[in-house]
Amino acid sequence: MANHKIIIAIDGFSSCGKSTLARELAAKLGYNYIDSGAMYRAITLYFLRNRVDYTDAAQTHEALGNITLTFELNEENHRSEIHLNDENVESCIRDMIVSEKVSEVAALREVRAFAVAQQQQMGEKKGIVMDGRDIGTAVFPKAELKIFMTAAPEVRVMRRFKEMYATNHHITMDEVRHNLELRDYIDSTRDESPLRQAEDAVLLDNSGLTREEQLKMAIEWAKSRAKKKAV
Ligand code: DC
Image 1 (cartoon, rainbow, N blue to C red):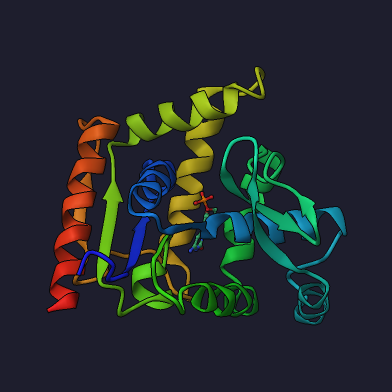
Image 2 (tube, protein in one colour):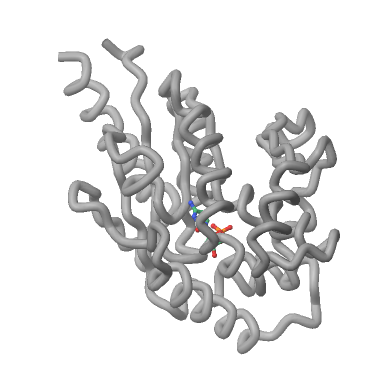
């Protein structure tokens, strides 16, 4: 019964702590963790580096044909990291230059179809925790457990600021706040799979919760869904 693997979809606004929870939950359950946002970021990085005009459908189509995305285990930190055409790009996909464009790129229908097809393939064997914006609504609408995460705006700004300040001492809170607000707006108002809470998702507001508290809640939800599945 304990071996019954399920799919866990975690969606929510930017910088709610989705990836921290998803990674820790996957490790506890012995599941694979996939950061779907990293895929949109790596595609954006490719477009920027190769000066792809992604407002042009033909250029976008051609560029996607030259992109291979894989997740590889980093033996040093034991994390699964994204590779763009065999190059580990984990350290550059969170730069502001990528963050400023990623929501526009992720709103494109062809880009979404490209990413979603690969995400669905990764979930074929179940035993996966994936975080993003449309995992419970579009990628895995039948996921056994869906969690929709949210947190107070200032908590989110502070989290992302700390994360970015670690590698860029010139970043300001205002820049981070502006980028988060803009991305949330684009992500939740776009035509293609906008960010929204799936009807059957559990809402998790983690503004006042510790990492351990949220993880404990998520493990309990996962265990009870896996048990239900096994009955
Ligand atoms: O989770 P993140 O901030 O790294 O995601 C980067 C962007 O990618 C985000 O602004 C919206 C987009 N995204 C998406 O549209 N669908 C997903 N499943 C994941 C991310």
